[in-house]
Image (cartoon, rainbow, N blue to C red; front, side):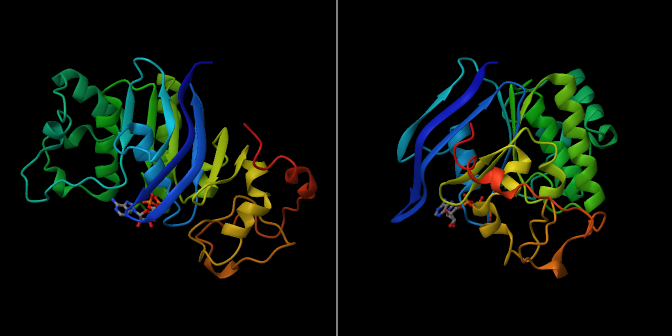
Length: 267
Ligand SMILES: Nc1ncnc2c1ncn2[C@@H]1O[C@H](COP(=O)(O)OP(=O)(O)OP(=O)(O)O)[C@@H](O)[C@H]1O
């Protein structure tokens, strides 16, 4: 399988502050990889380096020759007073054909909104418009940075189901940053847990039982990160889990030791 991006020893910082150091990362064709980490842990910074929007302070990024990237950034600075329709937005930065735009809007489920002002879309509709724009380049790799922010639980579940469908149809690799672990981890081939460096990485079940991961997300995150699995041998704040009470208390896992020697080396 082709390697789309390989990064070695990446470091990043702003002014006198180091944000990332010594990060190795790779993604291959067709893979779904999720990057998790607390606020400010450098997830968006890593995405921006991978797409070439930010230069690393140290390290090297190798991209497959001719790599086409579709990027849905966490924030897009578009003047909300700009009278920009969805259809015209899809022409940025490169004009796309009318038929291609219509087909893509249909595909992401907002075909009726082509002529609506971008600024008037709901959060979920807006993210679908961003997704349509990213997909118009027929990317080898789709990068989604918190693509479901501002959506309700149903909206984000629908969005990730759409991503899964599109990935099957188009064969695109997907790299996502998400706080919705219960939705995205189970669908990921690999999870990378970041906190200024790669704390642990591997299959979702490996990462979710890794001590480094638990140290970050087991307590004190106010449930922004719903745990992929629930276990009873560690403490975390049960009051803050967001609406996923389907398996509380009835799943027990006994594979903790197995995870220990895999963490940090799985790649
Ligand atoms: N352009 C910038 N100038 C100065 N500091 C920055 C800049 N971009 C990011 N930072 C800082 O770098 C750190 C990492 O930011 P980044 O956005 O990568 O984190 P993140 O893991 O994506 O966080 P979140 O989950 O909150 O989106 C933060 O402390 C942030 O304030």
